[in-house]
Image (tube, rainbow, N blue to C red):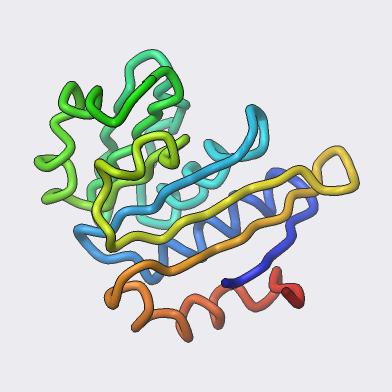
Length: 160
């Protein structure tokens, strides 16, 4: 587990952008956190780092947004899902084959997601704009990049 802290939305975006620098096609990033914790800000930075120039907005009502960049960025929001079976509406297997997929509220459909993923838990910090992050690698593909992940997140890392 890697623990990080940010002090403001711009730093949260920068942290997301740093993670994107080691992303590969087929990767899945699962974002977990309360409303307003910064999941979409993380995705905005992630997408910008991959060359996405379109505005990145939360897909709460559309369920999925797709952005073109160095890699295709699939941005899902499953907040309104009650069970993993609802994932069939998203054509998830097809999305996972194409680009990188970030799933807000992904813990609600964990059983429908691949075992290979990076989980990012975002919590509110002490100050209004402070956030704490727990990043966990799942599967060999992400574990093999753990040292690179630590390196790109060094400026935000705090002791566990």
